[in-house]
Length: 88
Image 1 (tube, rainbow, N blue to C red):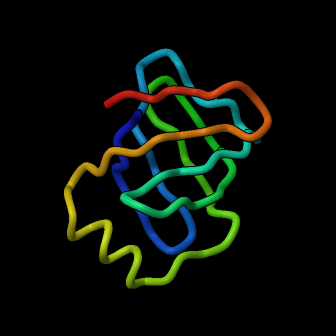
Image 2: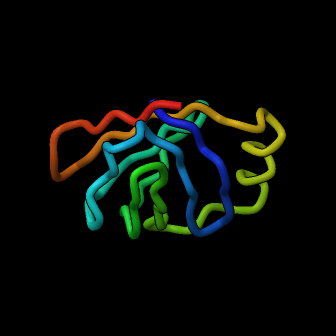
């Protein structure tokens, strides 16, 4: 689990457990509410990671996420490595 901090049509910034950064280049699936978005970790540090979506999402989906909560919970599942947990 992790906390989605920022989202736009092309990607998102997440906060994860300190000292457990996601590996750059890893493919992930982000579960937001009841839909999944595929992406790739493009940057990561001790506290945060940036995910670029494989396909852009529409503005209505971004608005939906933003309207639900200021810190949406999400699940990260890697496709090329064991599951990586991120926590809020």
